[in-house]
Image 1 (cartoon, rainbow, N blue to C red):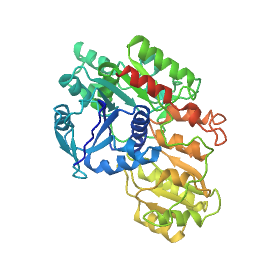
Image 2: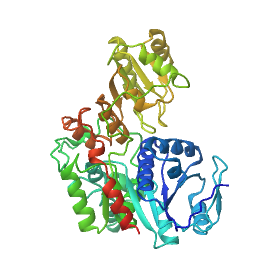
Image 3: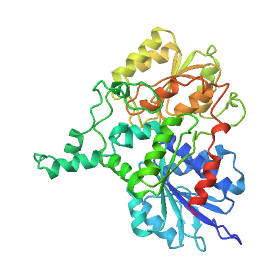
Image 4: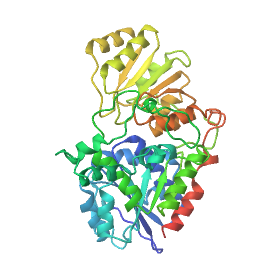
Length: 446
């Protein structure tokens, strides 16, 4: 039985996330920063069963005390709505991953729910059941990317996408097509040859944002639901960026979100567990499941190895493209490590895998400790889908990066153009942390 008791009434926040390490790492940072700021706060984190140990592990990366960790309840849950009902009824719930029983008797129901951008179906349910609870939308991306994905048309975004789709039906121009089919027909054309709008002056053509086809068609309901959550249901939003990195885009987002929509936006980034000290190579494990990775790294020349890692979800949609890259690396005698973790992993030609194994130049693994690898002195380059974590972690480690993935590019090219501001000698750590924003967020949610 796990219970908390205090003579002081606890405040209670709740967070939901998705099965993507980039989101989990950033959102664990949000939880820890708020827990450290407010000594009488309890945080409940609802995650799918298999993610409970992952989220719990990420919490330990943020320099929190055991006492702080005791106020964070990571609950593996199958059905979020059922668990939420038990929490607001102040009953006990059982974590499906650990069988830990959490007692909510005497604990105030959540006054704020932090909802990941890609769990938009939960927000309207929360508002229906508990109208006074504040919804905090979590944008684990940069301001420029938010505007490009969810901003108004003049920002290059899809804010009007749902309205434009409905207008087709209102005009009787749907021609018997489904809503998703019509939505896809009015989806912005990615290769028109136009410059993407960017307040910070990053010059980038739209076809640079889509250098290869993405997997499948646009996820209509998810994207539209995410936009509705951020612009309608949410009372505030948190970003994983900092105004010190992209001042003009951050101001434009604030002006639109706060000025026109009447909602608060808080910049909490960068949301990776940096320290305020200059970057140093982290201690590397010599035993355990990652031992072959570090043995391989240790056996290579300094700054020679390429890490190929596409996050938890994304992977090149055409396997032959990646195979061409790997064959080129073999021809160049460039050692590499390839992570096969993404859910969209496309199996490689078995003959190619055999060739790589025989060469001794490549290592295929199912999961990589990315931050540790990026900090290794023998790591020389990083091929990535360009996710938020990969972006900040590679900047902190000083690795060279390449970003081949669609939908991830606008914010990344801006970084490559500002590397003089974000070098290992002048990393984006304590100087741009969002602790003051944490305090303001607490005050606004009281």
